[in-house]
Image (cartoon, rainbow, N blue to C red; front, side, top):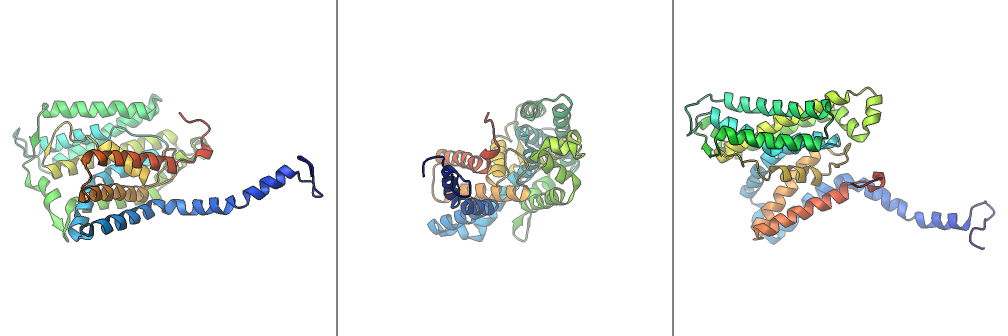
Length: 345
């Protein structure tokens, strides 16, 4: 039979060849699709087993507590960022908002710089201020139609600048024992910081899974045009998501100040990379519409376990940074559905 000829059913030889070659691929594609949601969890389990075999001290209870304590603040930040990335947007203001939140905490509580002693009003003021900055992010992004990348990048520097002005470019120590107790108190052998982070995670999980707001966030990320046609208030949802993220960054600032017992304008350095890495590694797609806070929890644990394991195995810090950088590149490559991307910018 010559090329392009037809058989008795009217199919060309090229079509027959194409059908034959596609048959083995379909089961593999379906299998990959079924396994994809479980991939981050499988990676986490594989990491734990590998590191534990190389260094049995990894499985000690004390080491698990250290991992949980390390993951607490990143989990809070990642929960806020998850809602933004699920919408297909990005929030780069994490480090600035965390810094200004920590600055407000140490300056309003008892400290070594001024006579202020407002107690718990300090953390409350920090969270509210960061929420207002998140609200400003949303209003500027939606109202002025400025891309989220540029809006939140600008707010990053606004927050960092405010923190620098408030602290006078110096390091301020918090002396309030109640604030420090957030990090030093243990319940059932686990730092209170970890319990607070888990409570934030559970609240965000309920918001994501069981509220109209959570469904609207996912709908916007999946297809904003279709969501608008379905009656979703696009602008209002985006503003609410960025405000919620700001509130969580404020909580992150409170927890960080309590853990370190001090604040500087650079206290948030590195938090943006850690949060983005955790969200993406956990399986939340940068294109939006997929993932969630459970994915971010797994992503935070992957990063924390990997960092802890590299320390236990004696990996140099410079190599650790390279490994984490490679991890986020691989995670993005695996999470993107390139079939849906017509243009890569």
